Length: 281
Figure 1 (cartoon, helix red, strand yellow):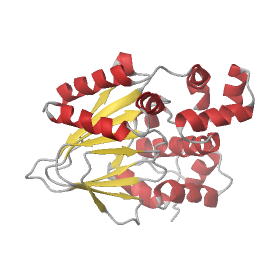
Figure 2: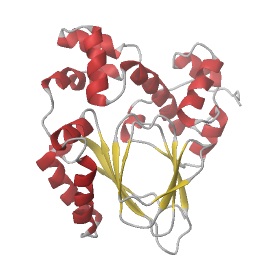
Figure 3: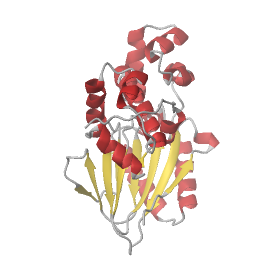
Figure 4: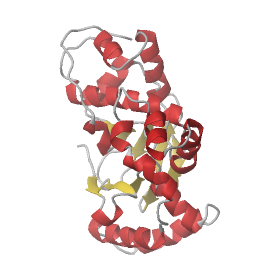
């Protein structure tokens, strides 16, 4: 039996700071559960209230035991694999935009992990997901700094940034009346990744979203190459290898097993393609 966990959307007061909160518990009598987490440029904080779990960054990496109470993840540039053992009890807070930067800058990077371990103790003292989320929400509201005015142009351009035909740097630069270089520096400072990395990630994310929705259909890999703007099949395969460590067909198999964990925004950018059939190993 697969334990899917529960995904709680951010409250209205925190919607500009976090995307969602995810909780999962594996009963003591259950078998270990393997999860594949899709690449994401957003930061995450993982609170572990249960047994030691195992994780591996990439399909060829060895699994390592994780017993830390608090782990800060991201950007996750390759598919992340997690093996949750019986007794696992996790809460994952997934940030959005400059959300993590706002928390880190308010508390201080050198103090953040210590403060999060204090928060872990408060969360450990309550047992229902909803109660833990209330404690976490109150903490974030009390400690996260306000957004820097320089971020407003980035956030206001989210729709255009996700549009495949637009360059996000040019869009933001035009809105904010600043140079492209300034925008590139702001991406790195507030989001933690470059605009070039964002462009590459967004294209691959749209491709994965299509596969998740249409994995049961017949289709041509060449259609995806053309639709998502790759130069050729080898260019697309290179991105599959870079982000997941897998070939297109191997990732498609994971999608068909419904064993790929995605953030909410993956499925906000679906596209339709004509049917055909062709394999890429």
